[in-house]
Length: 321
Ligand SMILES: Nc1nc2c(ncn2[C@@H]2O[C@H](COP(=O)(O)OP(=O)(O)O)[C@@H](O)[C@H]2O)c(=O)[nH]1
Ligand SMILES: [Mg+2]
Image (cartoon, rainbow, N blue to C red; front, top):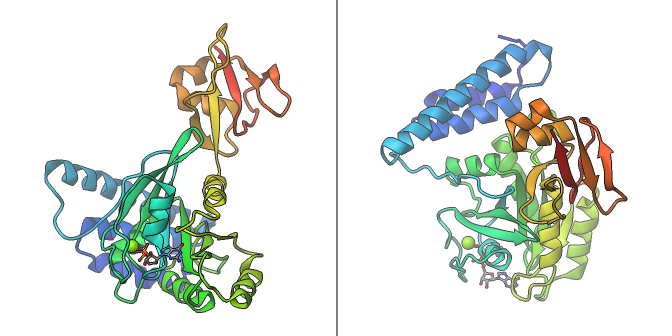
């Protein structure tokens, strides 16, 4: 056992041992993996945790197939090009924003705690769909699975109410997350969870001085977007920021001798090379790939590119195998 594990590790390990539901155990294992300092001395432990995680995931999916899992534990299976999870205090407009971004129709109410379970909608962004998860409000007695949803999301969107006190509310959210070893800012322990802040209800009578001071305090570290679920102000910007923070690219394939059709892109991670894309699309492609031709708005019009060429969003690729 490496001696240099942070104290949080042992706290979470204890919770892991005490957890009763497999899904809850899984969340703690993932938390442990994010806490471990990443260096040579912990490689073995990291590998052990990864094995445990994949075994537990297998067991959970088998259990789901055989019979509905017991206990109250909610998770949202990923769909589409990425999963975005909302984080926010009661009544900040999370459900209203889910409705504004997607075709979902979830309940919106004047009183807090209307959303007790995760609600999911698909957001159309140009030619892809991105999954948006609306969550119950974060508060002291929030269920452990809520943090599992946060941890599992590709990015978090912190929803603040511009008509309340964003300084105080953001501090509350940050400390609740930090208590569960989820960090939005760089920190000694744990990985950083990517995400950004939206200030909702900007249509209302907000205090401009408070809003401006909040923005100038945090804008070096976070993207902050002012929006209104009510009148759709800022919603297009919000959608574009979601796409950009997911760090994905859309790649279109073209058949040899056929015209270009920019439809049904493959969604890949930023930084993906031609050979990785080939592998993703078809195993045989990777084995047999000779080169590819590339078209894009950045000046390629069918030039030849090699296997280690890094692809960009919007690239059109013709594989030669
Ligand atoms: N003025 C204004 N009110 C909003 C906006 N978005 C939500 N609300 C109101 O805020 C309350 C809480 O909204 P809801 O979406 O249920 O919040 P949630 O608890 O975070 O899901 C409701 O009365 C909404 O009508 C907005 O952009 N502007
Ligand atoms: Mg709600």
